[in-house]
Amino acid sequence: MKPSDQPPPLGPPSASSVEQGPEPALGAPRKNKGWYRRYLPHRDDSGVVQFITYRLADSTPSELLERIEIDIRNVPPQRMNSLRRQKIEALLDKGHGSGILREPRAARCIIENWQHFAGQRYELIAWAVMPTHVHVMIRPMEMESLPRIVQSWKSYTGRYLKALFPQACVDGKFWAREYWDRYIRDETHFCNAIEYIRMNPVKAGLVTTPADWPYCGDNTSGTTERQLG
Image 1 (cartoon, one colour):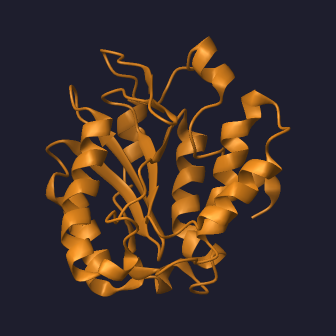
Image 2 (cartoon, helix red, strand yellow):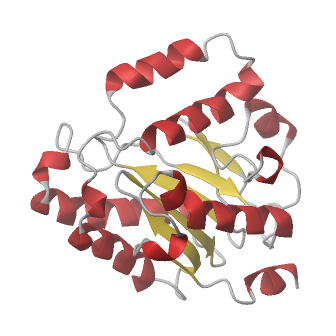
């Protein structure tokens, strides 16, 4: 894709976005729970379409993460989170660590876990399991909490998969501590994010076409129409 066709950043919002408040989101909920912060800023709003990324604990060697922090230390604060995310995403696509998520048992466990509560706690829109990380797009149902949804995914699959693949763990942890979420602002952002998910296996050099990667999928038929009303 040309640079102009690239999707907007899929990581957390900049510090200035948090301070000034978010712009209207696709499928805005009746009750806005708003932004909250752990190590990274997140937005928790029922009814808002969210693009979520989380990664294996062994996918980002500490020395390379330290190099990223050195590289961005002079970047203006409002750009730092976005640039950090972009650099870490590029690092993830290089396939450091065990890459255990390419194993069919691991990939199936994650996808089946997402599907288990689809239609109950959230609408499952699109997903991709990469060797070192995962992307998933959902719309939480009214009164559902995004951090609780993500925690339930990571907790269940982490317990199951670290028993199967202990070589992928770091200090007993299967998943890295944090995750990135990006709320979908409008139909253009939605389409670009779907394209990003579909093309990530190609961009990472795993396959030549999206259809060749078995751990991607979507339920996008009519999604934007439902969200835009």
